[in-house]
Image (cartoon, rainbow, N blue to C red):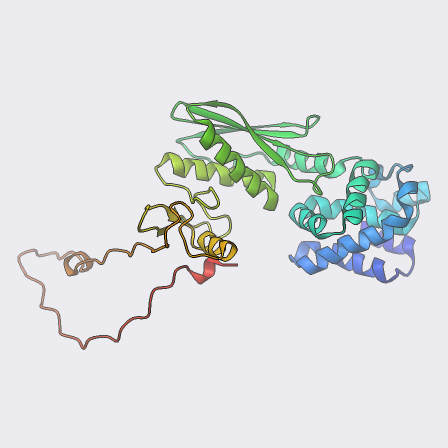
Length: 335
């Protein structure tokens, strides 16, 4: 209804407005990054000329209300209001894409986007993000071995996650900038008992990396799974500092034959590509993966119901052709 109201107020939309409208309408049906990027471009193209005037209008009052009613009451420029409304929706539902767009945009456009969020939208994207976290809560995923308490402070723009297990306790604080999502979420650790600072700092880096690419709720829940696995004895990947891979959710399984540290396959491949060498991240020797041990015939055969009857002798088979060398990583882990 809001989109139709804006369309009626705008009349026949221009090219930029048409691209913007299509992008906003398509937000709920897919994750087309180029389309979303064009939507940000269109927003800034429309807003740039009227940014000083928009700062003097209560644009933030219409963000969650009917836009057509706002147009009738305030007589704002329809195209500019449409851009502000669409930008707010993009910032709330596509925060990670907004950060990527801001990082790739020209410095002038990125600064205008931050000014729009702070001075025109009055920090409504960060307020909306915090309200979603407070409303949804974290009760859908539980672990009997650990407890997770989350507190949202809207005025301070922070989300505090307190993790406790086996008489160990740590707090992680996610702090939101007023220009969110065009500025990153910062993560710091607070109170920590039974956990050394080096590990706490590594966990904070891991949580910050997750908060860059997903929502606060998803980042905290994934961080909790990582910490649970570390308490269970699983060593993290030395490249990404996490136990579960951010996308494939696999455990580190490629083991260095020298130092015996284990890595995610895609993390190791990225390290090889960026460093332009084929050495281990930790011990800096030529990386050779430990081969999985071969199981004997007695380990492979199913258990027999009658132990007195020996298994039939294996039928001799022709020697198989030599196998190609094992791949270093799984293709489905690489993006």
